[in-house]
Amino acid sequence: MATLYYLPHSPWSERARWALDTCGIDREERVYVSRFGAPWLRLKLRRFAKPITMPLMLVHGQVLDDSLDIARWADARASAGLFPDAHAAEVAAWHGLADRVLAAGRRRTTRLVRADPAAIKATAAKTLPGGGLLPGFVLQETADWLLAKYAHLEEDTDDEAILVEGLERLTAAIADGEYLVGGQRTWADIAMATGLGFIDPHPSMQPHVPAAALPHWRAPALAERFPEALAWRDRIWATRSA
Ligand SMILES: N[C@@H](CCC(=O)N[C@@H](CS)C(=O)NCC(=O)O)C(=O)O
Image 1 (spheres, rainbow, N blue to C red):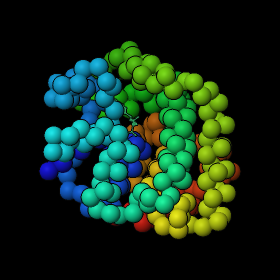
Image 2: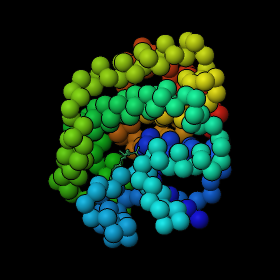
Image 3: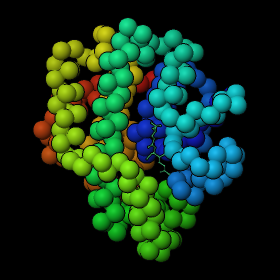
Image 4: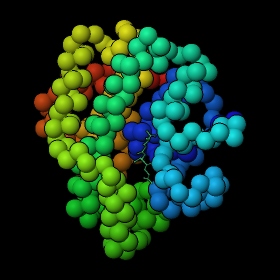
């Protein structure tokens, strides 16, 4: 059976789980402990250089270390229509947009959390074993580690503009029909619906985000400016089978 390592609060993990559920893929699920779980997983996978990111799935000796690869693998087994051949380029374009929106949202959220000691402490307390007892400087150092880890994403500097572009393109597309590509639910819809995770986490994701950090995971001005996008996200999410 497959084993999926994942982060319950993370949109990248959620979109992979969504695809696996849609495709009816049985698996054992293991929650990954950010940073501190890495050495053990590196040893297990004998992977010492390449960064470890979640989600990651082990199946029949194969390592699938990207949500898109996991979704493709699942769809190939179930023929769930998440990647219709006739619309491959469109699905890929939406996937790329969702990734840019997520990266911009994560930068924004990470910076806000880092500047708020109560939010950092709550995040560490929720994600690290015994995190609530760790001294403030360890938590601050962990936040710095996260920022450094994603420093390569700093190339796109205007995060607000990226988020607005994503929301504008999504709003324009859904004015033409419920599904983004080919008149059926595809990976494009799953990627964009979960892609709003740093604008307004879906209610089913909120319990996984520490309460003190949740305000930093929200961009209320954008949510107010693009209500159709959020309403669409909720409708698409309602089609998610668990
Ligand atoms: N390309 C990857 C990106 C996944 C990603 O960025 N995952 C983050 C989630 S916040 C991660 O695993 N971070 C590692 C960590 O927090 O230790 C995918 O789509 O699977």
